[in-house]
Image (cartoon, rainbow, N blue to C red):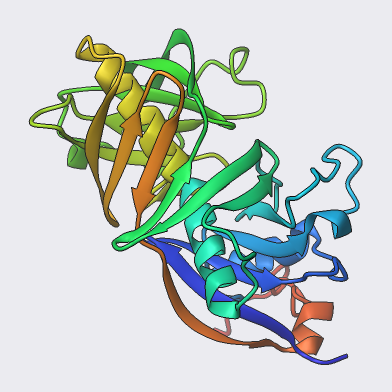
Length: 293
């Protein structure tokens, strides 16, 4: 078995391992994904982007749509399959462009578990039509026993966006915020976003299956939708400052568009033996070991 090609990339510091697998031959188990994303025993990333032809996906839940060649098989750092990733889409599309695998059209249409997404390359980065955001009921997130009022927003994946005047840097997101598990039975991404001022907001996010990340593409869309609603504006264009950089979100009556950069950092090969045994023998068993007097 030869090495497994990979590329490391990021979108506003939301980082990914890209695995080109056009024919769907890789056995991408949850254990392998978790090992790849581990920042000590693997390459380190917030998630894995498998580049696979939709016809090779072999998943009856997502039958291939005619005319759409590529499917973004996205996995969170814990190995779970996820519906959508806005930063990941941009990195995925940028990788296809660099690899020369783009179709000869002005608009790239990509399959995702949240449906087909349209991507356009701009002078300053990549723009992704994220589809309409579906606003749900109000709900609360809890950080350090403090409740934050939020709004459920579905951007192909679930979000709870909390508009707050609290200093974002003061929030302890090393522990997952509490939330209503009856409303979000499969977990939820939670955003804390400042009110809109001069067309700008700042945001922090805790992603399900990952923890706090420096940016979240779908999260910025959810945050802007919630912040605009809090300002009494159903539509608009807002710059979002995340820990990893600035993104821009456009909300129209029909859809939402995410604008931002995509960076490819390095490429190489995963060792074949590591791929077969990503745990590397597992953690040391310290049971029964005593210190020498």
